[in-house]
Image (cartoon, rainbow, N blue to C red; front, side):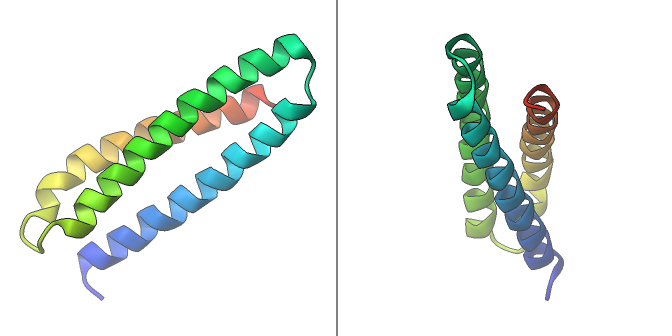
Length: 95
C-alpha cells in the first residue's frame, strides 16, 4: 500500500468516527428541551457542513494522481483540522 492509499484510509476512518459522534449529538439534541434543541441543531448543521466539505476533499484526493495528491494534502489537512476541532468543541458542549 502506498502513502496515498494509507492517507485515504486514515481520513476515511476519521470521517466515519466523526459521523458517529455527530449522530450521537443529534440523538442527544432530539431529547433536549426546545431552547437547547435549537442551539444543538444549529451546531450540528455547522458540523454537517464541515463534514460535507471534508468528504468533498477526500473525493478530490481519491481522484488525484499519485503525483498530484501531495499538492492537495495541505488543504485536506486544514479541512480535517477544522472539522476535528468543531467536533471536539461540540462534543464537550453536548455533555
